[in-house]
Image 1 (cartoon, rainbow, N blue to C red):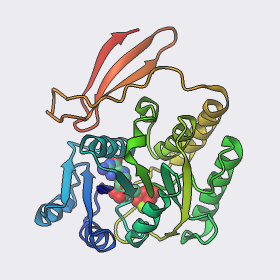
Image 2: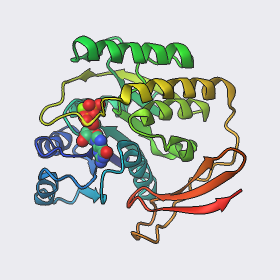
Image 3: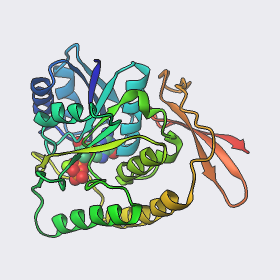
Image 4: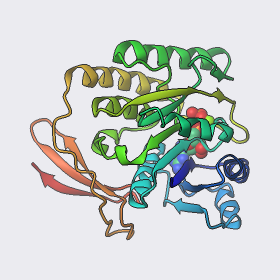
Length: 284
Ligand SMILES: Nc1nc2c(ncn2[C@@H]2O[C@H](COP(=O)(O)OP(=O)(O)O)[C@@H](O)[C@H]2O)c(=O)[nH]1
Ligand SMILES: [Mg+2]
């Protein structure tokens, strides 16, 4: 079984080397992919010094966002024909020792396993306001979406790669951290079997959180939008998740089409998840 473990980095100089060491210990047979958005704190120098055959680093030209970094990792895993993809944060909030447990979860006829802080046996080290917001957001998601999970928002997940293309990637190009909730909803709508395993979620090790202060409002709006989609919208148009070559950066799999709904017309945009190039393709 070919396994890929992925995390995104933006200014994680204090964490990146130890993350890779701990992943190698927990999953010695896995390859590791890091997508960095041109960190300026020395993360890239550290990664360059770690050159090893099982490590691939993709450096994007600037801060293109966490969601598109994850989508690029999905496309990388599909293009390179991995069987299993594990995604996680790069700040030690997610304990790499849990990787085998998440991968094991795929065996019970499950296509996507979420590492849950709120499942029986799970632990979240947040305290006070942040704990209450996180608990409330996940409870609200369960209630409004009607999806029987306890965790919707962490990025710690294992995927059966062959099932990723059942999801319409176009629906996942949403801003900020809303990506992770959108993935659960779209996976559910497109028939993927979802499961959970309890995890211990730790405070980040070094550095600072990159969550913008107003993200909570975007998250609330996104939950309402996804609730409507979940209950009212049937996955409609044909899914095209083809691996498309980007003429700007030369990457063989990073380009995708995104429908932009304008008032009366629908325009299609090409975006590259690797270099950020955007091109309008006209209206349909
Ligand atoms: N490549 C990339 N990584 C990001 C970006 N934003 C956050 N990250 C990484 O995503 C992971 C989670 O971010 P973090 O700030 O810890 O979010 P929090 O744990 O929810 O506070 C960390 O490894 C960050 O370095 C981004 O825009 N681009
Ligand atoms: Mg974090």
